[in-house]
Length: 340
Image 1: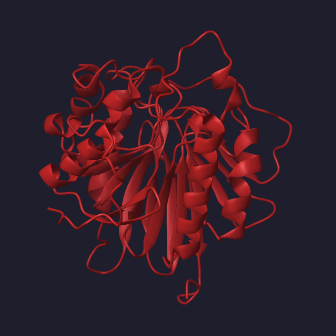
Image 2: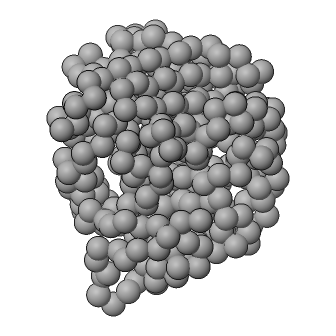
Image 3: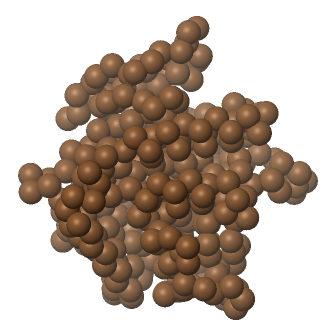
């Protein structure tokens, strides 16, 4: 059970969303340490030996179809083996068009009834994807979903702090300009408009939070890829606006979904590793960008997920397929005092 502390600041007037969020933290015992500007920070303790293990999954919510249930089964086995502390979702949590309300049965049919393994009954930290923005965003952010399943926590942007690592969750969908002009789909832009101001404030808050971090490891999670050779490819808006902040502040890993594949790409201008885990259900698109493959170490077009094991000195990241086979392993080490 988590403790409840006091947020750093409470906005005057209490918007409805903030009030719901405040009641949510009281009702369900999540611990907010403090917030850097608007980014709420949640404490999640490491293990007694100081280590931390978690799984990363993206693009999954299809009521068990397209091998979602099979991926969930293997996640349960790996989760038990690693004694995971939590699960990270990189977005596109409910297909095809998010949730219609906080009473939408898709929540239970795609989440509660699928990820049933004992090892997965841990906190899930989730960001929104572009498909989630096609539904009722406030429903997916609603604290009342936790009355149905108390594992669920989804906000636009926030921070998880275990002292060993800080994970910065970023709402990337509003960065992508084409979503604001396309006619094929309707997006829920409540609380986003004006887009430019929203992005400017988010980047300012994020940069401040990363600069202030003293964690040994720094991880940023977003739905959209910065670098990808998959179907969607690079996200130019993130290359232009987000990547420089990560490069300047010694971020170790950027983790994303969006492309329905598994990937590992190294940044050519910093030590950042780009890791795609967006293969939670429908995959096998059968296409790969054959240009701009600089730094590419691994690409897999099928379903799967990712595990992360962290200690003070080492990180081990493994990519699994739908059968639980390890397809690729990344290891990284750093000096014990590198964060000082």
